[in-house]
Image 1 (cartoon, rainbow, N blue to C red):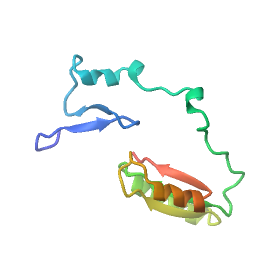
Image 2 (cartoon, rainbow, N blue to C red):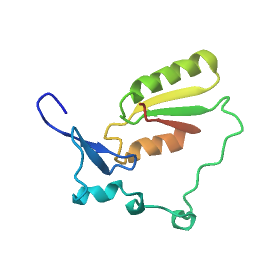
Image 3 (tube, rainbow, N blue to C red):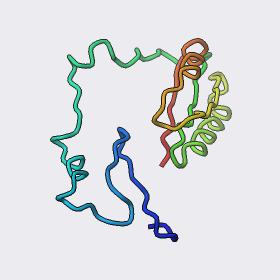
Image 4 (cartoon, one colour):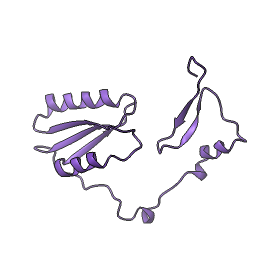
Length: 128
C-alpha cells in the first residue's frame, strides 16, 4: 500500500487485473474469477492459425537487432546493458535501442514498421 493509502492494481502478463496491491481480494468478489486458471483465455494451435514465430536466423553477424524497452520496470536499464554487451562482445552485430512511446500494452504501428523494414531481429525487454 502506498503511503497515501492508495491501492495499486496489479496486472498479469496478459494485462488483466490480477489483484489489488495492499489487500487480498474477497473470494466472493466478481474479480476473483480472473485468478481461476479455468477462466483465463487460452489459444489453441488452430485458433492461432498463421501466427507462428519467425524462423530462426543462422547467424546474427552483420545483422541489425532492435532492442525494445517496453516500459516494464528495469527494462530500460536491461536493454542499455544488453546493447553495451553487444558493442563490447559482438561488434559485428548492429543494435538499435528503442523505447516504446506508449504503454507496454498498446500497439505501436510506427515502431513495428521500422523494425520490419530495418531489422533482422528484435529483443523485447520486460525487465524485472
